[in-house]
Length: 408
Ligand SMILES: [Zn+2]
Image (cartoon, rainbow, N blue to C red; front, side, top):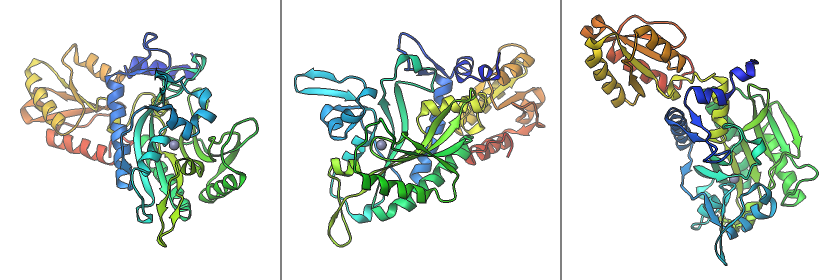
């Protein structure tokens, strides 16, 4: 087997029971199993908190909407080939599965009058959207038809765009460091021949100039033909185990949707001004992100988003109660913990390491009597027995700092 097959996220996803693709559910519509869902939940919470601390306001909006909404946004005119066909409820009532969250977030902006004092207004959502990908290109989590996107739309005054984009790039760097994402490069995606685009040349030139300025000091390549239909973007690329490149994070400038939705705010001088819409994703879709993370970590996630962080192994039945009591304390402290009684101690240690559980906690008669645990790390190291309270404090530190290392 080639190395790329050994660390294919589809194979690891099956072995580690992270997700399943069932033909009965449909191609490109994977189901997240409990272990994969636990890891994803931890990542979602982390991203939501990072955004909250950075001034983002989170919303919920439905994954489908009236046909007219997507006619107004331009998606049905410029992006229809990538969308599922509309669903007709009655002659004048058609719905589409949304291919993007922007139209709903434009409606959030215009839900009431806006003042310059509210800008930049950062509207964020981890939301569902759909793309009618051809069945031939689908595989595991990397190309799917149901997408859960870490998305936000930052509505700014024109003179705020530069700082806003630079701050977004900084947040992307912070999220990548915590998750263990190693970017392969930055790409400035521009218009190219043979594609459909909205907006006039002056808008495109202005947007491109702003993005180039934000990339000052960053190595990037220009990619004609890779822009969104409404504007140029900065894409941050990763390379998977098989050498395929894909976009994981993106920052896009859009002058068009604010016009289509007639968005405006009251400026300091009382005049009505059009905001600029910055579309951005810090970590991309949960599907593509995990396709990448599973491969880059070979299933051995950092402690803070490992599906099970600690598996407790009582040496024999005499320590079952002590193990249960510690598991209860660890659960209450927010840890993902299991107790494994089945089989020989050696087999249980091997099973924990096969499942990439970062820590196994062995409890023998001596440890049980002392209220202690002997920790064995996923990488083969082991620690002398330590009191339960110290074990919990260790996890607390690893999780709070989003440490990539197994020991602080
Ligand atoms: Zn958008």
